[in-house]
Image (cartoon, rainbow, N blue to C red; front, side, top):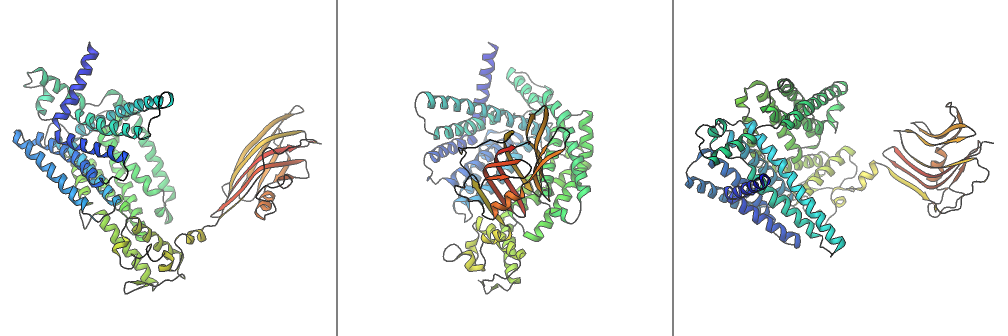
Amino acid sequence: MERFERIKGSLRGIGYGIFRFPLSMAFLLIFAVTNALAIEDSSMEAFSLRMACIIGILTAYVAEMLQERFVKAKAGRYLYMAGAFLVTFLYYLLLEFSKDSDMVMILRTCVISFALFITAIWVPSIRRTVSFYESFLSAFKAFFLTALFASVLFGGVSLILAAIDALLVSIRETAFIHTANIAYIVFGITLFLSMVPDFQSVEETMTYRRVRSSDKLEEAEYVKRSITCPKFLERLISYIIVPLTAVFTVILLLYIILNIKNGFWKDDLLEPMLVAYSITVIVVCVLTGTLHNKFVLIFRKIFPKVLILLVALQMTASIMKIQDTGISHGRYYVLIYGLFAILTGVIFSFFNEKKHGSIAAVLIVLSCLSVIPPIDAFTVARVSQTAVLKNTLSKNQMLENDAVTPKASISDEDKDKIVTSFEYLQSMEYTDRIVWLKDIGDTKSFEDVFGFAQYDYYSDKFSNDYYSAFLDPAVDTSITGYDVFASIYISYSLPEGSKETLATFLYQGKNYSVELLADETKSAVNLLDETGFVVSTFDLSEIKQRLMSNEITTENPEPEQMTFVNDTGMRFLFTNLSVNTYDDTEYMNFSGMWFYDFD
């Protein structure tokens, strides 16, 4: 009976969510239907409508949260809903008549959606008893519970469909995509909205004052549970995530101290590593906002200050890269995020907890600025990359009166800049807007315009040679005259090198091992006894040289060509030989049989 009541309560909660967010549900229904139609017909053109529906779902969600926070009258609710519908319609028109590529519109929609989601979390905490930390925790729990339930639903239905397909009748592959559409979009979003607490009477729900009806009491208890950190999550954050973050911070600081130098700032690993670290610290700081144990208090006191230092290093690395390559939309968002992370560190470090909700306002403002022309990410990136390309061409006397003069005799560094900037502009579909680039791909090739090949240029810079030979594994192998044999596989690279045991065996009461030893100077297979003494050795460079000098036939080689013997009784019969040289590094793969004669 109790279980039935729980199920009944859950269903009632989903129904309440549907009626509480009617406009979001309407946009959700349109989005799901257009998705289903697009799954069946890939040529269906409903891109703008689907992107607008995503914005509509979140705009209506924000409108409902604003209405519940600031307006009590029902007429106000309809006004907010009308505003949300108007915003969605205007965004649809913007997409429909935009000249931007689909990629730009998708990225812009993602940024706006993120800003709207953060707004919906922040609104209930504006001058209310509920803090931003509590509102964020409530959304965090709802999001992961929704992801779990939707994944279980998708997995279960997929298994049923797979069983029907395997045992009963054939099922179209699109059935699984339709299942994902229903599980993650229709069910998932509906469930999430049903889990959003109603903070309208927050004083009542938090203090239980003036709560008289059972419905109000139930609602109050639900709100209190939703903004309270469960014991499991509290222990996970306090005693696992916080210490791990602290250890990683120490490692990161040691890495920076030991390696800081001129080239360090252009290390491709530095920027993404620091961005990932700062995101982790900010999320952990927000999640621990409702906790007050010793570990958490120390973390919140020290790590926001460390965050400021490390993000400043990340911003420095990003700016130094921009000087060489210009700004792309990705690096623009890295800089915007870096600014947000520094401001967040300052707010966490020097303002009291009542002001910490302002980090949401900072994030929303920066997100909005990044999509408003002419300072948006895409306009800035287009102008920057065009400038890099134009300046490089002008520097080499290749651009005059909006016409490019082909020239192959320029430095590799300038070729890099030309290729990189052009490929970015081409990928974002900006070349049609530039007079001296728009003919590339239509009437002229890249090489016709610039004087050197776009892709062959890279292969000239990095040698990439491959040699291989394969022997039929079914070839007759004679072991006459040999005391031991073993199947071996040798794989290594130079100059990285390798050391590993290829085989072990027992002969006349003694243990032996066959080992690969490769370093920057040589590569060899050694036979060692149980004391470590080298009984016999074979230099593998002989195999490489014979393969690369074409002494071994690459197609259908004779067994004799794939056989190698030294004068100390060691023999190889390989069925597969391959050597790949790339950028001064050699990659070797040999497999076959190893033999040895102790006499």
